[in-house]
Image 1: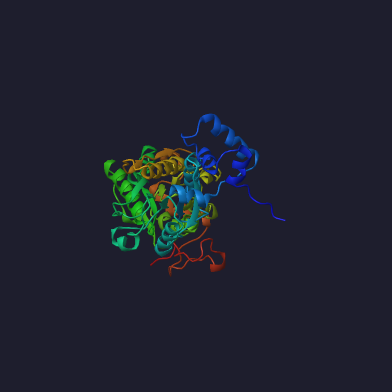
Image 2 (image 1 turned 60 degrees about the vertical axis):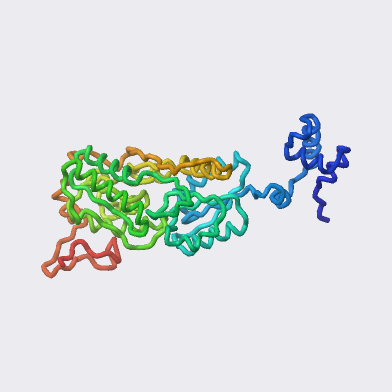
Length: 387
């Protein structure tokens, strides 16, 4: 037989006080003396009383819940951001509801609408695609909303943002390679996260210009696939061959997952990192420390992003004045980069190194002699074919 839940009336009978006195005492109402409050709360604990969240929300007009929309539950980057969100939410006595948009705008809007109908106190959205053109779809959202690393330049003024300086991060990554003596530096990017990719690419270009180095369009490869971050590994593997024959000695990757994909492709093609090629990622996810070699990367302060966004939401709930926040990234140096003079192939010799490592020759008819069934990079345009 199911045990009956303890009610406020049960506590009132045990304490010999009224229902309203117990209700106020459990809410720490100052109308009840500290001594009586302490005694009633002690009785409630002894009786294993569990407050009715629905009843409390009716009284306070708060549900003590927040909704978080991430791109993917499997995303290692946002796993750490959510950890930061939960740390602050837990301290404030709030519960966190989590859902995924899978980088789909309609799913993002549906998730926000669902949270709104569930009467959450506030909403946080990662990698949002919402912009001013969509105000008709979001006009009825009446709870504070914070966007984390928004992917649109013209998000509505009604929303607040916490972002990382992607431009600075891109510049720092390339400046690190320049400091190591590299002069031919490539970029592996993604096209489906237009705002952050644009800013990181601009940082890359600015670093080259400020160092007096040439910009070569052949050194930039942008994927046009729609991916979640976890699938960016495949993007890195597929896109790397496009840069290998251009003579680059160092490559800055849009994020760590792209860099890991590039690293795996190099291992399959017998290209040594960093002896033949230096790689820099972006994000500093935990995986960077465990791949071989460990990955040099630009760190986004993920826990701080989550904590700052949640604190901003709390301030909005208390009707405090808040300002949008931009956090600064920084380079974490590991083992995937080395000085140019220590690399075994110079900028002009990369395609030769790539060919030697795979023991293939370009045939007169422009066809690679490696049988398709043995190709380490299937479904990718062969870098050895003459077109």
